[in-house]
Length: 406
Image (cartoon, rainbow, N blue to C red; front, side, top):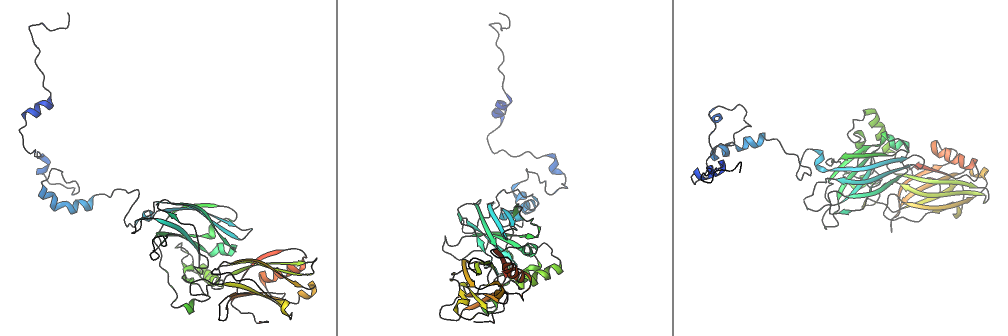
């Protein structure tokens, strides 16, 4: 048959190279064969040959390690100067100019740095700067046990105006919840600051920013100097505005505006009712009130007084809201009288901190009359000039206690 070997003839057995080397190599440790390049000097110290002896490599290990390029770490665990080592935060800002509100929707965080405790139970805290830190502090719920928490929660600031958008900065801090481990409050895992002057009214803007290390700020030396002033955050932070290089003139203007706003603001509703024949005054809410108690909060309530108008019917006060700097009252009061008489009167609105057993602390006040100016005058005139027309406006509180009446 074609292609077959004769029966008396045998084909020589072939041995592969691997089998040949396995047979010929004597047992014992295999030593590397020196290359000819080992006998010539090297001009690149980081290209050390792998065939050096153990003693030579041990003496040159520090130099090699120092020249070795670092490997990227998708989830860094240690300290690093790179801001991405602290993680990123995704959120959306919306300035609702029609309702004077700022909405901050916190979505999620990625790649948070694991704290020393080993577990990550985090929430997001926000503040408006410059101003009292406690007064503008809002926070989300706590998400436990993950370096990529998802909150999807909206924090709302009431009484946010165009002036605020032009000179304020929103600070967002990712914080570790200490109550779940019964220990003291730890420093934030990271923070970031967003100047609000670039927000377009009624248009949402999304952000995805790397967290930075916490910026240390000065604190008041004593509680007495902090009462009625900016607690935990000094007005000097207006000069930096989140490190964006604000001009000196703009920083000075922001500092002046913040100094006049540290007592907070109040939302008032005025309406002259032709059916009832009198003035309806609504105390809706206050925002960013000055902290008057040692715990950094206040127990606010509002007093009303129509001058000149003798008798108890000219004096009202709301209920007390406990431990808050952003109280919501939604209470309405009525002053009877024709519009011709009300034009000659003055409405005094004052916010107080309730103290049990001692005198109440004055937080701030506002006076509406025909002798006022700015928004106070416009609010008073439009209310009395248009019957059955309800007008709501925010007013800054000043530090002058009411001199008329009580």
